[in-house]
Length: 292
Ligand code: NAD
Image (cartoon, rainbow, N blue to C red):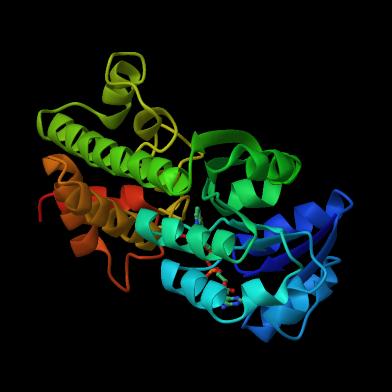
């Protein structure tokens, strides 16, 4: 099976390399030359253009920053450059509506299409332990599954086109709310005289236990491997969380869903996200809860 991989950035570079290591023939393209060069050092065949990369491919995987890049690529000759009836997988995190539109462009051109965003960050991409949330037909899913199994550990077929993106942004909205709640709990606990370790010992074994407490605890100390214990190095960057919450806000508004806490999390991360913070782990938002 020949794969074209477009978008060889922080995530795509690792995902493409894992496919090469698993024995697939992978041709890669990125608008940044340096990214193609690094990928080529890891066994990816470099292409001069996106169209060259998809020429003769059985599967095209895109891993772009945002929905506009996916829609631009799908609308500008990429679909026509491919052999008839191949599979297009978009693993970028984009709006549900954009994912549905992208899939329609691909299927109208006679191809199979999946939205397949991931969680697990660059570490998951590097280690091949990503979670894939997949929207699209069973036929497309069955064809893509062996590739997801190489790049990831957990694969969920959520339903028709757009449902992969829906699962991704809903999950991240809940995660943001949970993290802010945990940050407020640790701050209030401290103001009431509880040490971080004491509160961690209680919360990590009580009903408020969650990933935001036991793995990504927002205060330094209780979890040695957490971003907070390592100067808030991500992890999952604040800038990406702010982006995903913008997609969640759009979905909340377009579906008219009562989601006050989701909207509050969107506002909190949008305000917190700045040049200084966008590269820090999203648990660093606890700084906004601390006095003076
Ligand atoms: P990135 O910016 O590092 O990589 C994206 C790459 O796409 C860049 O190298 C860029 O040059 C390239 N690109 C843009 N338009 C292109 C085009 N038309 N043709 C070819 N290449 C093009 O971003 P990333 O961190 O790899 O994230 C990619 C996607 O995955 C985003 O949608 C992000 O939200 C999502 N995501 C990222 C993480 C993470 O931890 N980094 C985790 C989960 C999901």
